[in-house]
Length: 172
Ligand code: GLU
Image 1 (spheres, helix red, strand yellow):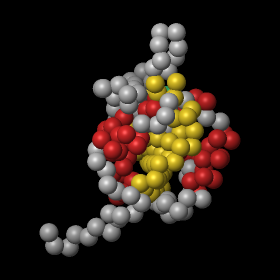
Image 2 (image 1 turned 90 degrees about the vertical axis):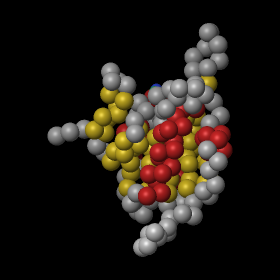
Image 3 (image 1 turned 135 degrees about the horizontal axis):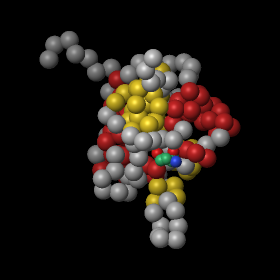
Image 4 (image 1 turned 180 degrees about the horizontal axis):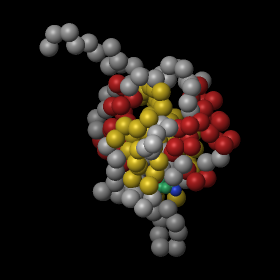
């Protein structure tokens, strides 16, 4: 194929894990779902990903427990990273708040994604969402994006619709 270049093929990607259902583990009937060790490394290994990637565990929180202080620390952490391509795994309930807190970080492309059902479940949306985020972060210009339900949203133009169980674009 003529004229096609591949300038971003080796640009390293940082995956910052914050928790959320993507990483949840079920214990037993007496307990609730807890955020466990991140499944991100396993999902990338299953997909035989060879792209240079660094996985950084930031927290293991349900996103309802993320505070403004957590978001400020996350912003600082990402600002200090050499990587310009960053995927953030995050609970869906407050993903948009964190997206807003990450706006304005210069030349970084930041893609937030998560899952509505744990990656440890066979019918989880986690592998699809992480895979899509991994692709979008490589090809999108700097900015903050949310990748959920097969759609790339600008970080500030989306909300989670709990009734529908998916993310929808904010219109008007
Ligand atoms: N409360 C959960 C959270 O936002 C909702 C499910 C999910 O992780 O997406 O962390």
